[in-house]
Length: 573
Image (tube, rainbow, N blue to C red; front, side, top):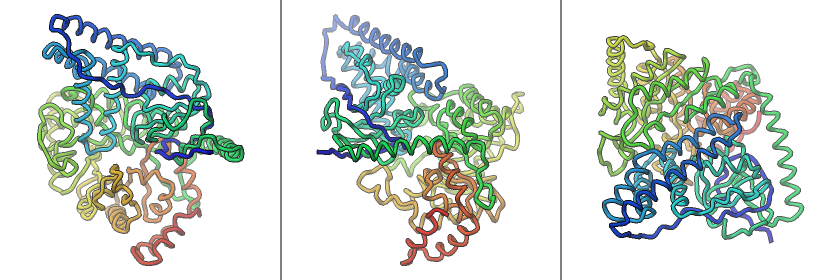
């Protein structure tokens, strides 16, 4: 009998192969004490385990082919850096020395402490960074317990089933020729998911108990687009999926033919397709796909998995590498978007609702000593290429004016120090708070551009947490209130003659592109993997026809024929 399961599809690929079950996951560590006399030896054992885990990662990195993209290698480098971080290397030693804990238990306690911090974060992307902690700790624990990592198994053509996979696992398996993987844990923004997309591995995550429900050697179908898993399927079903695999391969080739082709509608209306990037190494994909610009460069990764804050020079060198690497492609750098739930040294506060508390621009303006090094670095990096600054979570004009005053003060300080920097950098704001959308006209008079952050705008407007399984069914980009707010912002930008872009997930979803084009949006920023699909969709559209249909739709929001009108707009033209 065919087994069917559902999870979170994180790639568009489909694969068929034999199940290969990895019997390891997060290790269960029990409390254990040691004799005080054994503390020095236990500390030595822990240090040897860290060194062993570090050496294994170095070996994996050295085996990666030289033509592998730098953004992929960066995942291994991140974990190598973490294995030098005091939070994971020094704190467990202090616990061993102070309480005579066994090394495994000391490391486990520190892991729980770090994971608790990440679990309280409101930003879904940053919350999933706890995966890094879990993966690195697991590597050290395996070294402590002298466990085999199963890396010598024959995995070519297999579908890997595991509780979770580390970035190192994923990279090694890709070069071993695995067909696909399925995990019990993980989300669409985890490092494993990002790597699967970068490496073009069909994958489904979040399939609970899958390692117990399937058997070694079973034939498994993995549909990474639909998040569907089938085992023990009949021949007709397998033939159906084989046809889909062939069709997908042909389509991928066709999509690559769009590289270098202008993104225009059928009548020639130019649309700018930009990339959202998260790590400096993402620039290679952006250049390869010839994105018009980087519409959103997140900088929070500089603050994560570390003690203390990055200094100006670290900021500057990071941004300079990105700007120079883009070789003239414009980039919009979003300033720090940490919150009350994501503390850095010197900034401590408590908020019962971090999503609505001291975060993003609010935190930056309250802590200028933390913020100014980033501003100085951005201004310095802008000497090397076209840069814009974007401010997250604006809710009132006073924030814009304070930011501009701080920017002027920063420019004056750089000038006094004799340090080269770019002047008159465009400054824009993210519209992700309903109040900002409603006041978009006022913001257009103060800023050079606006970018609609639909992820937060939708959840703030509809009062739901999109990562909460109990209520995320209410997350609706097509809710009349959301459409009204988006239209307000686009119209405000048109009146003021300033660029309006969208950088949320809605921008990269081909289902919504016709509607957004009809509303007047001409700048879309999305994950690099969505650029060619979005371009393909655009080439099929008639902007004038969509504008007429959308004007009618906006007059019928909430009416009985709304869904019918919406369906016509989103159908292929």
